[in-house]
Image 1 (cartoon, rainbow, N blue to C red):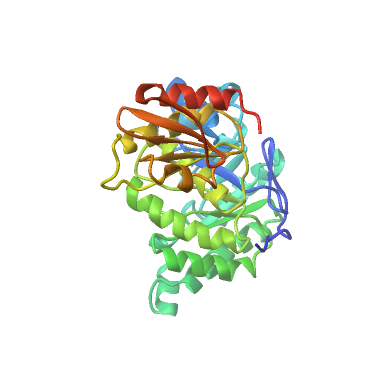
Image 2 (spheres, rainbow, N blue to C red):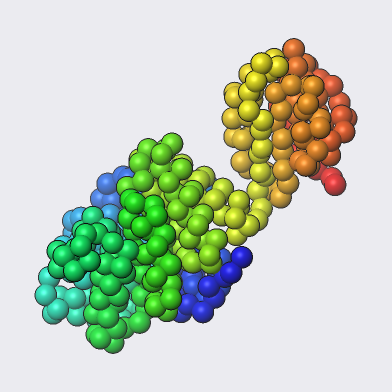
Length: 352
C-alpha cells in the first residue's frame, strides 16, 4: 500500500498527524457542550473505546467557555466546531481548544477571519478548513455544471489560500460528500495538490447499517491509496459506534494492529446454536483483551474445526455442547453454557 508521507506534520494537543504518523480516529460528541459533566462522561467513554481526537460543537459563548473545564477532565485533543460567529472561535481557543474547525466563508469578512487566525497563531492552535458538498458555493456549482469533485477541491484550496495569505500554515483540510465515489475522486485530486494533512470521512452517510457500508467503501478506497491522516465514520447513532467501525476499517486495511479480531460463519441449516447471539457476546467479551489474534465463532461442529484453521482460537457450537479449537485442532469439548467462560479463560491465559 502506498503511504502519503510527505504531508506537513501538524501538532494537535498531544498528538501529531501527517508526515506518516498513524491515521488517528476522531468522533464528535452529541451532548450539549454547555453540559460539562455529560460531555466529559461521553468523551471518557469514547477514549476508552479508542477515540484519539474529539470534536465538540460550540454554538454559544457558554459552550466555548465550557471547554476550559472539559479539557481538565479528558486526555485526548479537543477540536472546537465553529460556524458563523468568529468570536466563538476566539473564545474556544482562549479556553483550551487544541484545534478549531471553521469555514472562512461563513464567519464574515476578511477582518474577522484575520482575527481568528491571529488568535490561533498566538496559541499555536491548528485550523481545520474544508468543504461539504452540500454547501458548495453557487459560482463553483455553475462553473462545473453541478456539484463535482473538481468544484469541492477548488473550494477547499481557496479556503486554504485565505489562511496562508494571512501568514499561517498550521492547517488541516477536510472535504466531504455523501456521494461516496465523488468523495473518493475529490480526495484523489486534492492529495496531489495539498501539502496539509487530510481529515477524511463520508458526510451524512446515514444509519449504522448504511453509514457503515458507505464509510467502509469510501474510506477503504481512500485510505488504501495512502490518503488520509485522521478519519471519522459519521453515523446516525451513538458516537461509540463510530469508534468501533473506524478501528475495524483501519485494522482491515492493515493500518492498525492490536486487539482481537472476531470472525464468524454465516448461519445455515446445520446451525444448532444461537450463533448470532454467541458471536455478539464474544465480540463484546474480548473488547478489553489486548491480544493481537484472530478468534473464530462457528455455528456447527461439522465444518467448524476446518473453517477455524486460519484463526488462532475458536469455538464451534453443537446441540447443547461445543468445541474449543486451537489452530484448527479440537482441544476441548464443553457444555454450551461453558463455551464463553472457557474461551475467555483461554484468552486471559494466552500462550502461543
